[in-house]
Image (cartoon, rainbow, N blue to C red; front, top):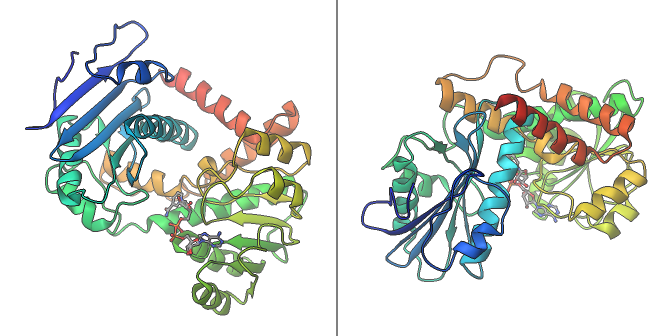
Amino acid sequence: MGVGEGAAKGSDSFRIVKRPSMNSGVTGVTMALVLDHADFEQLQIHRRAGCTAVVAIHSTALGPAHGGIRRSGYPDLAAAIADALRLGEAMTMKCALAEVAAGGGKAVILDHPDLDRRQAYRLVGEAVAQLGGRFFTGPDVGTTADDLREVAAVTPHVAIGDGEDDLAGATAEGVLASLRALAVRLGLADLRGLRIAVQGTGAVGGRLCALLAAAGARLLVADRDEALAARVARACGAEVVPADAIVTAACDLLAPCALGGVLDGAAVAALRCRGVCGAANNVLADEAAGLLLHRRGIPMVPDFVASAGALIVGATRNLTGRPPAPGRVAAIGETAGAILDRSRAEDRPPRQVALALAQERLAAGR
Ligand code: NAD
């Protein structure tokens, strides 16, 4: 495949293709940046009328790539490319671990004050359309259902996320199953009576609280939006904790369901829980925090394992037109349990074990 091949109509696009056995073809200043990155299948940069978007396909070894559209004020194109590649690769791992016949990809839009948002999403839509089913996209940070309707105007390969499937509910169900697996590995028979701290009571956290309350857990909840936390607490019989105190609250299990990066070295050192499992993406600030957590003997279900419920529902819908079979999302608990067992047996952080397992599945799938 050559440079600029398959560019979205009327746009100024480059396509960079890199496979181990293939020479890369590229024009412009991006080549060095791209070639510095880990292996990936395809990277496209689309530009039109002040809009720049990057579409990265990390792997289609197990099936069509899946990944949402992130819109963010990146400092430059290099940062946007790096983010697209990182997030696309993470989606590949997530699909492999969720045993979904799909791969990883990501689209990112470089946001700026003069961005014509509608045009930007149309541009991504055209790029997705041209990929002809090789890449399915959907929501991510900075992208609303209205934005996705612009994408849907030009391609069917997009999930708007406001349809009949409760994606956040599926995510909460997968986290619940993972929390159960974690509790068992800690020698706790049941969630009943356990003190569980939930950070973030939004779409996923709020639903998770309802499920945990029904399972008989004693809940501590916090949200930056205090009114929301109070509402969820009333509905679930939970205790509200200040937002800056929830991570280090004394509890059996901590369920981060807000933003990423909350567990840095200092936070890990101050934890007073026995295990960690939540939906928030990239909870660990860095590898060192994961290592410290492991050395402290606090098992953590990797977030990209626990939070796969929405992916399972969305990808199954995309690939088959139907919802997943009953029990499919709850089976996340079995994967979580297997990773925790292997982590203990090999004395390695669960995140490293999960990534190794994903690579094994990718190799087998290929
Ligand atoms: P959301 O925006 O509905 O909820 C997040 C909540 O966290 C908000 O209410 C916000 O006020 C709160 N919050 C933010 N920072 C906080 C802090 N420091 N302390 C306490 N509360 C804080 O988002 P969501 O859809 O519930 O997703 C939650 C997390 O799970 C995100 O990291 C998301 O990327 C991840 N995730 C979500 C899904 C899904 O299906 N929605 C799937 C996979 C992963």
